[in-house]
Image 1 (cartoon, rainbow over the protein chains, first blue to last red):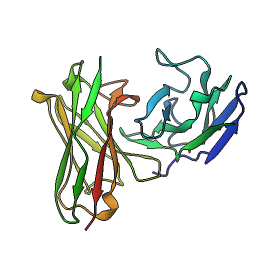
Image 2 (cartoon, rainbow over the protein chains, first blue to last red; image 1 turned 90 degrees about the horizontal axis):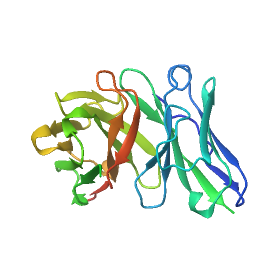
Image 3 (cartoon, helix red, strand yellow; image 1 turned 180 degrees about the vertical axis):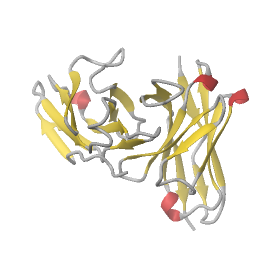
Length: 110
Length: 123
C-alpha cells in the first residue's frame, strides 16, 4: 500500500475557494466511494470533515465539500476563513479492512 | 459525549517494551472498531491497524504487521498498542480513533480521535 498523493501545500485568500486533490489507484480511491478527509490544526488531533466521498458530518460547515473522479478525490473549501488554515489529509478504504492516508496538504490562508 | 482518552506521554530507551492505552467514553465500546494511527514528527498520518473490542478481531497494515501488537479489554472499554522492543524510529505521536460505518466488514471513517500519545525513544 502506497500513500495517496496530495499536493504538499495550497494557499488562498479569505473568501476565495481552494481545492485539494488526492490521487490513489484503482485498488483504493478508484474502487470505492469511501474517501474521508481530516483537518488537523497544529498540536491537535485530526477531525473528520468529509466521509464517504461527499458527506458532511453534523457540525461541519457547508463550505467544505468533497467529490471524486476516477482515481482522484478532491476536497473543496469555499469562502476561505482564517480558521481553515490547517493540514488536511485524505484517507481511502483500500480493501481487506485496511486504509491508506494521503501525505497531507498544508493550507495557508493568506 | 463520545470521546477517546489516551494515556500520557512516554519516554523510553531503545529495546524497552511499552503499552499505551485508549479508553472510550459515552458509547458502547465493544460495538465499534478502534483504529491506531501513527504520526512521526513533522510527517503525515499512517494507518497501523484496527481492532473490534467485541471479539478482538484485528487487522494490521502490512507495514506494521509484526512490529506492534493491538489488543483490547472491552470490560474496561480500553484498547492498547504495544511494542516488545522499541526502536528510535518508533518515536511518534500515536492516535486512536473510533471507526464509523459497519461492523461485520469495516470500511468507513474515523470519528472521534483520541488526543494522542507522544512516544519518545532515545538512548
